[in-house]
Length: 56
Image (tube, rainbow, N blue to C red; front, top):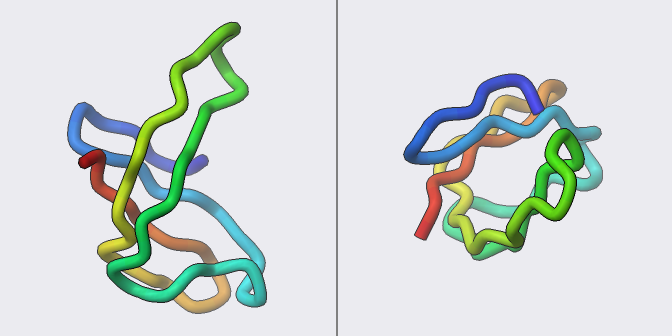
C-alpha cells in the first residue's frame, strides 16, 4: 500500500497481478489487527507500479 485515504487507496503490485479497470476487488490491510475486508473498485492503473481503488 502506498497511499490511504477515507475514499480509497493505492496498492503497489506487479503488472501481472493488476486487475482491469472497474473490477470490484476485496481488500484488507495487514497494518491493523482485525482490519475489515472492504469492497473496492479499480479506478486507476499505473503500469509497473500498481493500481488505485475507491471504497464502494
